[in-house]
Length: 222
Image: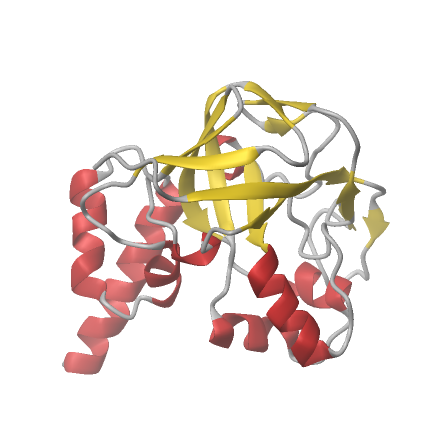
């Protein structure tokens, strides 16, 4: 299904500011690159993400299916109101702070055209102990999970450059309609089968998420 009606805007492009040491019990890599902050100008983005950006825990993060992480300004503002603090671009470890698009309710496989770059929505962000530590907020993983405003990981279909102020055009929305939020929560496991049937390029991690939701539902019903 094609559409050019929905558009958003890039408020900031964020890359690693500094690596942070983690306590021994948090994170296998011992360090994290979650501290991302806005940078000026147009930044090149390739198959594995933005120039100048990287991950430390390459076992659980990064790769072509998690090349870029986007978070909605509207969700960040809501969290800011709840936490009583301003959550500047990069606070969620995101590469793109986006205004005007419901990022957590984007459809898996949805394609965003930003300038000469094309990105494809690939998965929800799953919160971890590193995110909990970085946030400094009590019970953060539980709260983030319950709210399920996860933001979205994206694959890079066409490499290019992206800068703050760029428009985000939603050029394609798959007919299966399964959203990032639905994949994260597993609230409608029967619908998730549509995702595997119609999106053959989904990652192994996504397939495992779908399988976990299916097994959990089967256990509840039995």
